[in-house]
View 1 (spheres, rainbow, N blue to C red):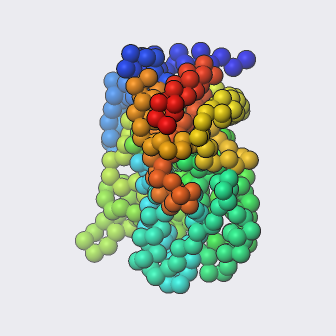
View 2: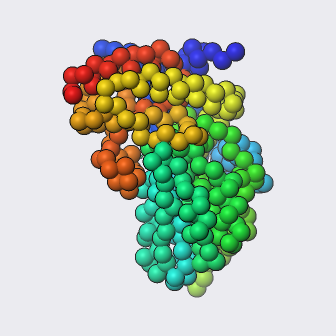
View 3: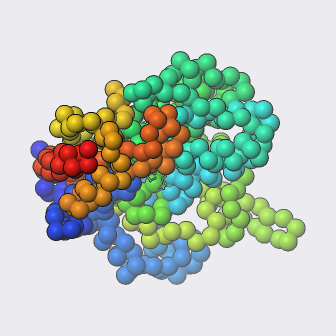
Length: 405
Ligand code: C6P
């Protein structure tokens, strides 16, 4: 039996008052809160083993390196990567995408070739591709969506051609909640010889990811949205691609030998990890991986899906409300507008009641343009949220809508 109160007890931050009201944290798509085991892992790292990794032969350096590499191993297992060398530590999703755009893009993209993204992408999965297309004279194409916020797969299929070099799509939309059919997107791209990068920032917190079953070429995500620390994220890549890609940044750790004439680069993944990495947060990320695995992805997804259904139904009859993102397959993101009311005003009035939601364009301005809106109010749920919180949220939202309209 799933015991949400037992889960909540593991999250110290949840047990506080905000503006005199018990905190209701519904901004999980922006960043999730951290369980005690992650906080303790950080403390444990700094109080027992802090040292630089891969460099020293002293005991602490060995301990730190072991803990750092243990996270790589745990992440590889979690996403079913064939080997831990295919798991590169980055600062997060944004850096992972920029890394691929800058290295794979710079090395392999040719003038007149095409990169396909989708109309619902986060700016992190638009701008790096725009930059590399401009640099290389390549063309950026965009898969359109329907009013429900679903990709038009027939249009995508028509867009693909031998000119397509790379397809970059999100697994789950941060602004709509749409879950995209990644295996099918990958299958179609591979038929044309294109590689696929999947932005898994909003999928990794909710679903068991199997990079081999999906057959993705690159899969990227951030620890901080899956109960881990900020400043650490993952780039998974197929071995032959990572090996063929040039390095991202130059510096320590990414080399085998340096002379003033030339440098030979280290093997993967270290080739992409120049400089002292974010060791402490990487080490603590293992505790986040363990948290989601102990809780179980099935349990997490089932609970969040109940919350989404309950919230959607509970707010549906509020005057003037319109839900943005009504795809058949949805993760626990509830985005909406209220006619005649600015999303920011809603967010501020909810905050006064201790309720944290995100308002605005959610770093998806082209998507907002498609819907003809400046932004939405977004409630996004995590495993520690409850139906009772949704009841309070719906009651306060009703009052806010009434007062502002
Ligand atoms: N979305 C949101 O509130 P970083 O910041 O690198 O960890 O993740 C960027 C990113 C990339 N792709 C998707 C689908 C995302 O949702 C995000 C982060 C947050 O929706 C902050 S804008």
